[in-house]
Image 1 (spheres, rainbow, N blue to C red):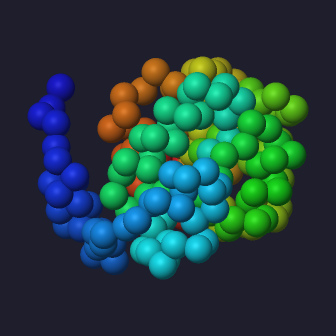
Image 2: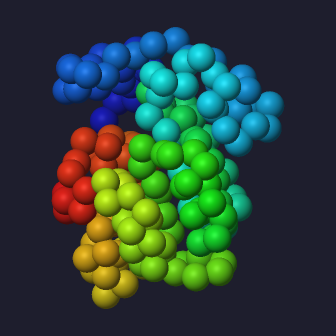
Length: 173
């Protein structure tokens, strides 16, 4: 499709579209050493924090690597199900939550509703295999900003995360 962009080019493109966002050098070493929280990092305030809720470990890991490789984003936590997600949501206060609709201990629509009850300003992006179903429509009705298919290219997922961060709660893109 398009040419591959360097991190500097991506940062330049983002800062051009987001006056409040500026690329800053960030150390992710505490996270890379196995810590699930980035609160201890002095650069944590410069990062937009993402909570991943996905029951498939391989997909969750790939999504985490994609997000951690994007300047300005960091994974604040990972959960395989509803129970872990609600606990991490309270503990980590993420800026955006990426949710699958099919989870080990419940479904993503119920999770979106619960997160909305806990914080009406929550930004939720759904990445699922069920993107073209009535369940996806239910996710949007529950407050998700956007629903993407898991087959979406990496740049589309990252763009959707930035769009979710820039949206009003429950605003459909």
